[in-house]
Image 1 (cartoon, rainbow, N blue to C red):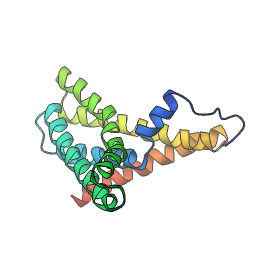
Image 2 (image 1 turned 30 degrees about the vertical axis):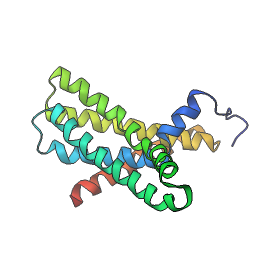
Image 3 (image 1 turned 90 degrees about the horizontal axis):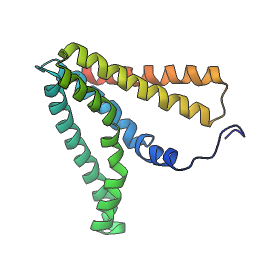
Image 4 (image 1 turned 90 degrees about the vertical axis):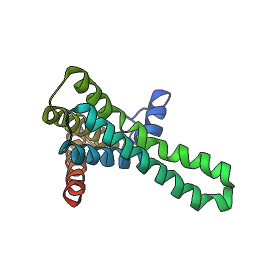
Length: 167
């Protein structure tokens, strides 16, 4: 960490725990893929949100189940379940920006195509911010931070498109 990088405190630690975990980044990518897939068959933004949110909840439960199953022999069932929920909750937090965009689009009566485009931009922005912060924490030059943000967003969207093509 560079001397120019301030220590993490308060809200930064809270945000890290919810949005910078592997589960959160996985949740962000998966939720974006669900939105992409469901937008093909949706009637409106609410339909996209409904289908994508419930699908994410199922993936969240599968993630919790997998962690609980692998940990309960060492921690006990209750402690393993609590740990699994804490670990996987980032998947749900990561969906908040795109879900908020879909709510706004639903309230405004935005077309499915425009609602989908708005969620892609929201997801791109979140991925770019995550990439920028990662390079900032490494003390990278500002240009490298921007390039890292662009690369992170592009790679994330590429993975979303791969999931879409596979499904």
